Each structure stands twice: as structure tokens, then as C-alpha cells.
Image 1 (cartoon, rainbow, N blue to C red):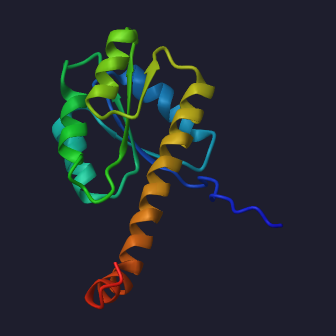
Image 2: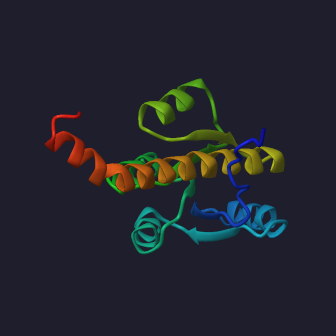
Length: 156
């Protein structure tokens, strides 16, 4: 029996939002070892503009700059058809921040300075989550006409 597989994320597109050049340097280096692409923004407004223009599945946001900038990204993208997964990172990645990230709709929390394996793992898992939701949405859209017909004849 053949196993169904989810495609490996060969070309992940991600966005980094951080005002700190050191974050940009480290994450560019991590992404340079793959065929993943990294867009960058130094503030929330710039990040939101990129997210409105481009379908970016994963966003990495610093929690060390402005207290609520990552929350703004989560809130402003929540109404998108398939919102990006927001990974928050901080030098102070503690239980309080982890609870805050989950409570506000973030996907994950990373501690900086970064561990390359943690970045790769978290970005891959976030992409898979985003891709799975995208596929489910496509399946629902394709099934909608048959569901409408079934409802019209009393089948649903």
C-alpha cells in the first residue's frame, strides 16, 4: 500500500520582522543553506504591506522590539483566507511569553540567540500547518457545488 505524503517544503517563503540587524544576519545565513526565500521588514507597517502584497506562509517576529508588534501581525492577518503562521522569538522566551503567544494566535515561540535546527524545524512545521489548511480550503471549495445540490434536495 502506498503512503500518502505531504510534499516536502522545497521552497518556503518566509518573512522576518525585526528592527535588529543581527536577527537579519543570522536568519539570512540559515535560509542561505536552503532554497527557502526570506523577505525582511524592520517594522510592523512594512511587514503588513509585504503580507498584503504577497502570499507568505510563515512570519518570524521579534518580541524584543515593540511589545505588541507581533500581536499586530497576528491580529491583522487573521482575516486572510489562509493566514501565515507567526513564529515569535525573543531573548526572554519564558512561560509567560509562550502563554501570550498561544493565547493571541501565534504559532510558536523560539529563543534567541537562535539554534539553526530549531529554526529549520519550526519553519518547516509552520509551513506544513499552513499548507494543510490551504489544501483543506481548496477541498471545501471544490466540494461546495455538490454540497449545495445535496442540500437543495434535502440530502444534507
